[in-house]
Image (cartoon, rainbow, N blue to C red; front, side):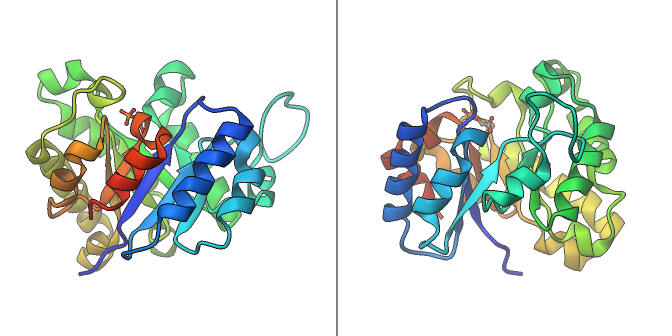
Length: 251
Ligand code: PGA
């Protein structure tokens, strides 16, 4: 079954507004061929401006990297789903390991944010993945199963179909160490299997599962060619238009 392939960039806390707009323009200009979607996960401050420079390219979409869990009110400094939606964003990245580890986000909180994003007709990019000690203890499948179940399995079939999953082993994020294509494939197949158990084969075969963790132009092709790897969530390498362009062309 044909699945939507995606090359998503997660800029994290990088680029000034000017740099971000320039980067987005370059990516939008270079993205011409193929059927894959490109998603740019920019800082909140850049969303509206980046939207302006990508909107004429139907293959390039916009994502926020997080949202606050309340809808509005006295939460100084927080950004709501309605604010994000009003910029023209299509996706929100949720449950990134940096949000979990640095900001203490729990499975329960992430599940709630998934609901909020869906309620505004945006799509969540749900991240999961194990730290190194968990892999060493051979508990990685158990942990990722738990994260996926707790984060997503309360959803109706109709809502689940709108979700993109990103498997990002924590030990591979920003470390230059990439999961081997076999390690990525093994976990992606596992995730698809538990999704099939819950929602059936048809939905499982359709859900896009991205790999994240030191994806680079040099390894993207091999990773993306794995049966159950439908693209990447790319951090560091998405900050360079040329390199990210090469990743986009790796499908
Ligand atoms: P990285 O980050 O590509 O820099 O390892 C990936 C991510 O955190 O999404």
